[in-house]
Amino acid sequence: MLKRLFEKVLQDRTPDFHALPVFDQELRREIGEHGAPQAEDDTAIVARLAQDGLLGHLDWRDDFDAFLAELAPLLSRKSLPPLDPAEQDRIEASGDLPDMLASASAMIEARSQTLLMVDTNSDQYMFAVVSPDFFRRWIDTRLSQDVFTTQRWEGGGPRPKRTEPRDLGGPGQ
Image 1 (spheres, rainbow, N blue to C red):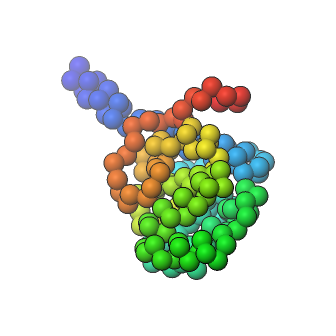
Image 2 (image 1 turned 45 degrees about the vertical axis):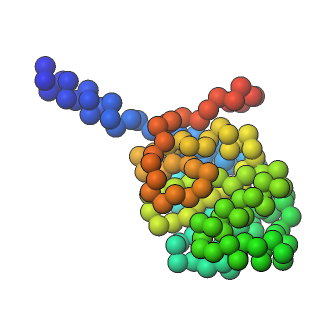
């Protein structure tokens, strides 16, 4: 009896995450890329999203030029104009990568899109340029045990409890 109770507690504490493959599929649809995601583990899904150019990927040591190199194709895929020189100067002057991401987020919002951070519980910065509806559906969602979305990179912040996207009541949701 005690053993079954202990197993139940462990089962409740380790939820079965199915959100990351759904996030993969919806992010592809959001960007206009077609094709079914492959069945793979969480780390591979996130790495493939970055490799396929759907997520920007930076290391904590990367500089402003690396940041622009990751952001430019994400803007292009959403048919958004590139950052102009004045915007680039403001972002570069904002400081380190988390501050650059916050500054770029405001400029992207002026283009009617949103910067969604994907925290992988590491020293990487991963982000996507998405519509406001996609953002509202997926913000603060645990995609897997160590992958979650957030509005601003917090570097190991508290994990959200939500393990599925919000139902916004729209078509296909």
